[in-house]
Length: 140
Image (cartoon, rainbow, N blue to C red; front, side, top):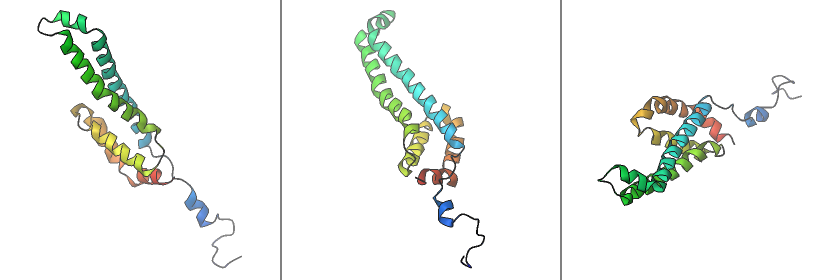
């Protein structure tokens, strides 16, 4: 036994440093946020599909709107909401690497552009940039 060993029954230092840090508490709220934003954009996507399918019926209710206008509106809703839905649905499924932490910051910042999401995104970003969250994403 070396004289440098503090106690013979302690694990070596390399073993304790190789353990991954515990999952931070913000992770659950981040997943909830991503699911909520994914569902919101999926709802907009569904409205776009419905407006395409029912363009004649929707246009019949308003004499100033044509079926072509409703179809353009439906295509625009689909074109905008589909990438956003994919973006938020993929966020919790990414591996725990540094790029996933950056992806998370982008996802939270994208939500901060909506005034209604600020009560959720401000605390989320505060806890997302804490050292234990960063360490969780750099552990693997």
